[in-house]
Length: 269
Image 1: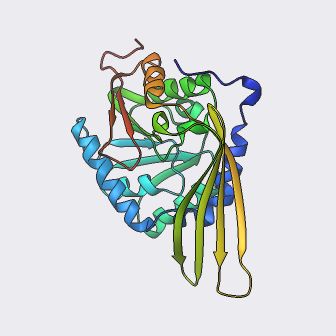
Image 2: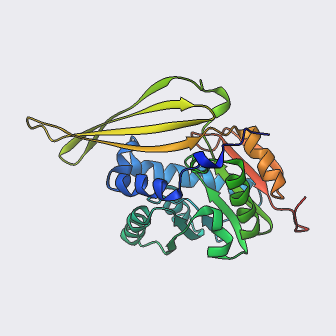
Image 3: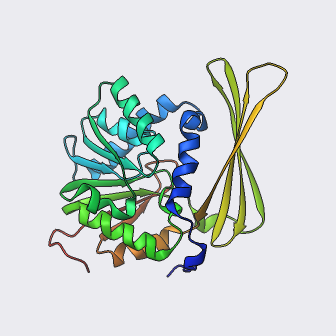
């Protein structure tokens, strides 16, 4: 079982919402090519869903949709999407992107820890991608969210989570990661991040430097705390929430993917 973070250390989810509200206008520059990412991730998730018995037309709930990277890709492939995020700014951007693509998606603002309370049940797939689960800073919060995912699904439905592989990262000190140089219209962006560890947590500082080729640049830093839960620890919590057939997949997205199934008989194990 993973280490429990003391409740005094648990950051309010409003901090996560503020982080992504500030990032929303530039979220796409984190990707080499965001439009390509939408298409390739949609195709990869489609293949994974089919391998577990799903198909286009299935009802998919994305509980951490962000600006829509996975939501839009799956909607474009014929899935029926309902999507939410803790960030109202991200949801507004995702809604605009869906309209621009003539895609019908039911968007709303919601905390993943209350997913079933907000969305109700009967979904074929629950999706939580892009390392969103580690924004929940304790085992109890992740277990609560996992139980909500379980209740959102029909019996036999599948839960898909993508998370960073924290089992293989160094959990100490200050770490620097350069994402790259991105061209966005008439501006160039330098994107990098710093992780400062107090294991099992770390503070993530994301830096975005905007250069419009004048005498000065504009720099922003956004900070949020994450919980470095491993795939094994996360799988244990999913099992406690009632899921079965839990497996790690390394051939779907850039980050490892955990797939879990709600038993057809219903109920928790």
